[in-house]
Length: 243
Image 1: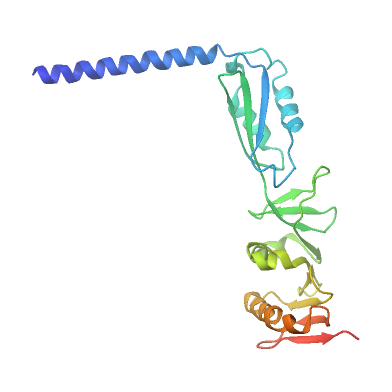
Image 2: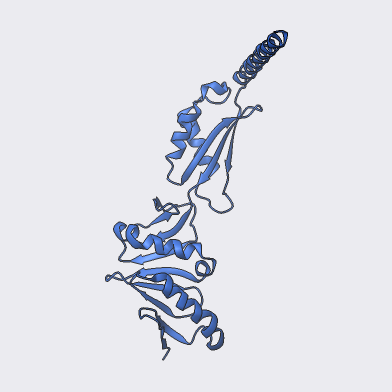
């Protein structure tokens, strides 16, 4: 019986302590006065779509009297929603520090291809469109020609992901051109040739043939001997020499 009473008293004291502690922390947090905005862009070394001034402008527009005010004057969820509406932001997190800083962490969207159609746009790694930026140009694979959203969704995006996810092809292929007949022509970084991939069917097998040509054939003959490499035909690669 005594042991049971001791356990009950222990939990009562522990809950009381936790309640007092949380109340103290909340009171202290409520007394924090904001005096500075800190923006942390997690992937700033890779992309420069979002900068400090962009975020500061949103904060000041939503809360013009943020400075000198309590942290409780800022609705962090609403502020995150506003920041997430920026087309280059993938995710944001807003919180305050005990030093009186309003901290905004930004994760930018990651484009993997630039589409040269109309005014142009990017497609990110999730397959979503994002506009071009006047502040930053991402060095990614370029797609030109007869491109539309349906083609991108049905077949082109898979081809782009295949190229960008492979270290060798990502460094070698710089552009994909789509003909009106939905055939694909690849432009390499090294060499003066064009690669006629043909239709997208069995593209992985075609890239295997091309890789064999690059590693076994071009290592002996050189990269500038041919003007065209045709991968359309099964089990063979047709190379056209320069005149």
